[in-house]
Image (tube, rainbow, N blue to C red):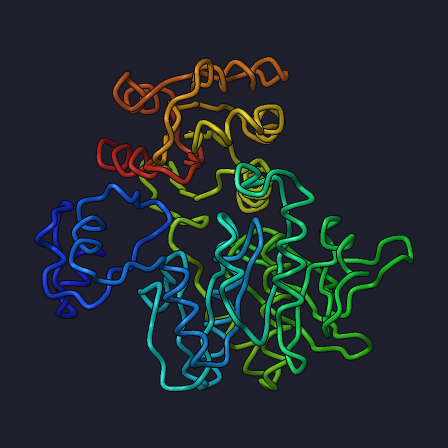
Length: 418
């Protein structure tokens, strides 16, 4: 990423120091940057505006026709699918995404049209700064409760996000998600639902899929909008959960009057997102796959996708992400690895958090083992993990590295050592 910025003419400083902000007109910070950061302090002293990244994104969206995709899981993939479809349709959108879109080689691009597609971050409530005309909510899950205090608080934030759209806007929401279904009676703006099925006659999605068929590293399905048959679609990434993401992207495109054949072509051209079920390589018959999944729901979906793609032994290296998440969701993590044949658990990636007594990678491994999993071991890169994998992996095995930290390095090092 740094090399790419430099190639494009950007000036990159390695390390944080006060002199880096000299001549700056504004300093944009992510939510991970503390007020004690030397560049932030220097900006304050020199009366240079310091604004959150979300505020800058909100200002950019204010000047455009905004499309914002939010949700606990699937928002990066869904946002990328929307960008792929609109680019394929010749609409030349601006997009800002949390992962690199493989086919485009970037996570952000400035387009010529007035369309701006953004992945909306709900983790700290900053998505409420945005002013989109179209919103997508993929799902709601037990995340970021340290900020919201409770599931009710989290739900209220998503309800506000939906109801903020203008009268001419639309919300596209996943009816498969029970938390979203609870919100629908209180939604006062126009909305469409998407999902896989009806719910015992209680609710039938406006946009849904049938005839879902898993292929080698992809899925085929037929899409329907109410009583209209949209025809066959194919995505080149595995997992039924990605059909759900594709339905959301189709919904956005239909709202923008993109012809169905161009929607179909845009999805077919979509080749995934970096660190989202990304095949890192194959050597000696061992396939190495990496995925950003760091929540039990994401892990279960990724393991199901791996099982559908390969009928082969599945070995997982899992790096828990954040002490607080590991503590709060320990019981759910314990049950998330049922489809893995073997699990290696690394130490927790702190992501800026201070350690919590008793919350460790070893604790996580023991919790998974106590749930009944037959093969779990706590092991780190610096304590023989690569050597252990080289010793135990066989021709035909699939190694899946899971986590939002730097667990991907395990796959890279293993491939180099084989």
